[in-house]
Image 1 (cartoon, one colour):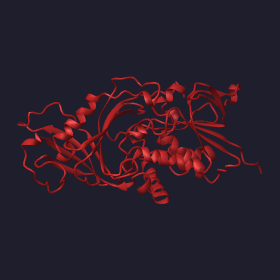
Image 2 (tube, helix red, strand yellow):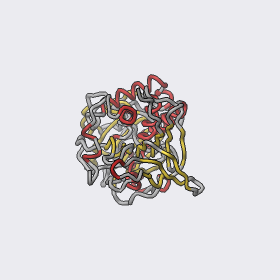
Image 3 (cartoon, rainbow, N blue to C red):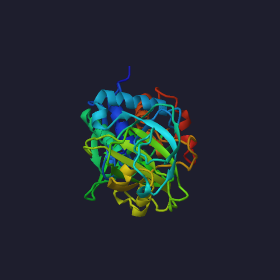
Image 4 (cartoon, rainbow, N blue to C red):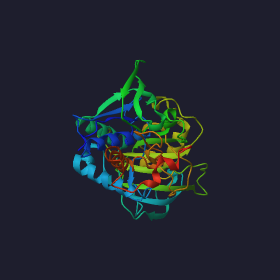
Length: 393
C-alpha cells in the first residue's frame, strides 16, 4: 500500500472562488494538515474584486445546470454549519422580473402598492416571480469568512501578487513545481507546489496567456433606504412614463440586504449594466469608478421608489468579472473548472461571470475532489473542463 502523497497546494486568488476552494480543501476527508499544506495567495486584499462588490445572489436556477444545484445545496449547508445568517447575511429571497414605469415622484401622492410597498404608486406594471429556490449572501462577508474558516483548519493566507508559475523541465511529464510572487514591499518569493489552482478571475490570463477571458466592468451602489425593504430581489425593465420628462434610464438590478457586520442596518445593493470601456487594471485596488455610471443607477432608482430616492448612498463602486464570452441570459457558457491539459498539478477555476458567488461553494467542492481524488465526485462537470475553452488544448 502506497503512503499518502504529500501535497503542497497553492490557490491563487482570494475571491469567493479561491476562498471556497481553500475551505473545501481543508474539509476534504483526505486532507491532513501534518502532511499537506494549503496556501491562499491574494495580490491585494481578500474579496477586493467582484467578490466584494457583487450582488450576492445564490440561485438553484443559475447556470451552468451541472453545477448550480450542487452549489445551492452547499451554500445551505455552509450557512447551517457556521451560522451564515449571522456571519454573512445568508437568507432566502424571492426573485421577480418586473416592468416599471418611471415617474417624477415629486408629483405623486404617497400611497401603498398592494404588492411591493416600497415602489411608488402606479410604477409597477407587470410582475413575474421566478418560481425556484433563491437566496443571498453578502459577498464580502462570505468570502472573508470562507478564508477565515480555511485558516482555522490550517490553510495559510499570504498577500502577494503571483507573477509566475514554474514547471519541471521534463516536457513528457511536465508538472508544476512552484509559484513566484511579489510581496507588498516588492521582494520576490517562491512557494513550492505540487498543485496550483488558478482562481484569479479576470486576471487569470496574466499568469496563463492561453486562457482567454473578457473582462466586463460593472458599477453598483449601496443605499441605506428610508424604510425597511423586504427580501425581494427585482430584475426590472424600466421605461419612462410619457409625462415624466425622464429619458435615457437604465434598468439596475435591486437587491435588498439585511443588517450585517458591515452595516448594522438594512441596505439595498443595486447594479447597472456591464461595459467594456476601460481595460482591466493590474490589480483590484486600481479599478476606476465612473461616478456618472453610479449616478445613472441612482437616477433610475429615484424614479421608481421613494425610500431609495430619499435614502443615503453609502458606496459607489466598480468591479470586473471573468467572462468567457458575451452571452444571452440563461445561456450556459462555462465556467472553466478542471486540470489544464499537458501539465500535472495545474488547475483552473475561473470564467464564472455573473454567477461566481452563486457557484463558489460548488466550485470549491469539485476542485477539492479533483485535487485529492483525481476527479469530481459530487457533480458531473465534464462540460466545464478547460479543454473546451482554452486554445491549443
